[in-house]
Length: 300
Image (tube, rainbow, N blue to C red):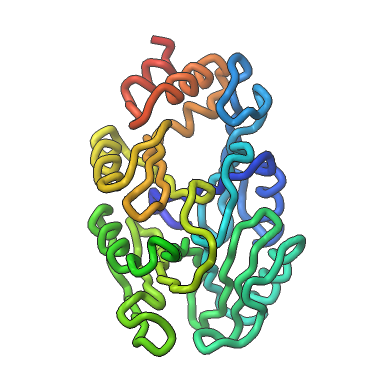
């Protein structure tokens, strides 16, 4: 499993529990790591019933995800998809067929120039997966893929450099640029990089897709302390905009959640009063304040 502090978050209406079971079945293994609930004693911004499930944390193919029951505010689109690199064509076929149950193919399962077996599929929840065989790969790897299109087209290389600079221990693996025949010269055809151990992919697309980045797929950053929260909150939002409850949009339109790592434990504590105090305190914040959250959790 990746030890990266970056955890993708998928915004759903009210299907987080069902989606968790679907992904565990599709990937033939994994785990449900934590389940958090909305407060029973107060309304919540999503309009979901008090006490109902707010998030389900899962791990599949070594990748952590948070599935969020956030209500109908945002709709998932393919601007952020997930590459899944598998050792063989047989494994690709099995995963693709599982993900297509109730879903649809954006690029059909076939041989392509970049892989003997590849498909781009949208599952029943609207999440996009690019599944491909990579002979010689030692383990299954999942990599979030950012597609810069519409107003963000041509900014993939700028974003790669900005993200790598923001996260210590990061680096660029390679960037393949268009030569002008298949796409605008110099824009990114396919770029691979890592952020604090999390494999990532970025690409430009000059086609008119009718969508761009939104909050429906965000990237959580689990921070060790307040200093890390402060630094990443300021760095990632430079040229972008701050949001509530630790959310922000960077200057490319990608949504991030900058979160103290311990918060997940507080929001799933068996002590209902403690976790509800913590949730209520979080709702009042933009940048998350670890000391104030701790005081709320402790009942101060």
